[in-house]
Amino acid sequence: MPERGRWPSRWGFVFAAIGSAIGLGNVWRFPYLAYKYGGGAFLIPWLICLVVIGIPWFIAEIGMGQIMQRGAPGTMAKIGKKWEWTGWFSTVIAFIIACYYTVIMGWSVVYLVSSVSLSWGSGAAAVDGIFQKGKDAQLKESQDKQIKLSKTPITKEADGKQVKGSGKMSIEEGIRAAMNESGA
Image 1 (cartoon, rainbow, N blue to C red):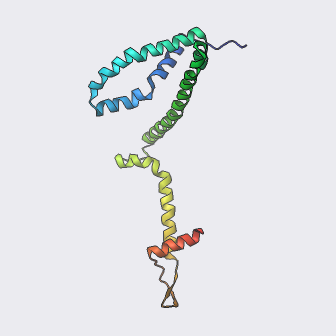
Image 2 (cartoon, rainbow, N blue to C red):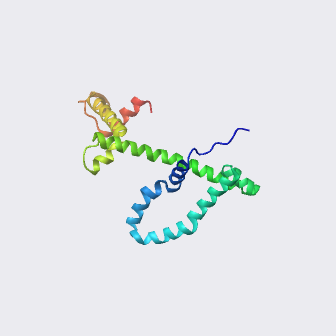
């Protein structure tokens, strides 16, 4: 059996533990919600829960992993076979968190690049437009198609005879022409 990997330094472990314990919620969402719903009043129960539940739980997890030299599922299985599912549960939760953190990091990169290049213009409405580039292209394509259809002379039936149109069509005629063109 190959030797199990170990942390090369104590500081590497400390920074990895801090990074996994703090998370984006404390940096990104918590200050916003604390400001929105009363600021400092929420800090008191948060600190109590942190000291009474969070830190002891964290130390217990780290200690069990250190003593048993296994991952979460193996550690919980060594405690009792019926507890192995809790180790797998925490592993699955960590994977889910990693997935949505990837999306948030992608947004951060888009905002960073846009802020450096000033590609969104100015004002709050321009910030909303960062993710609209694909939709704007679809809208322009749709408008170009409508212009093309409106310039096409059409033939109408009026009183049972064929009449050459002026090139302008009603909304209903435009919808019918677009549906016929797309094969719907």
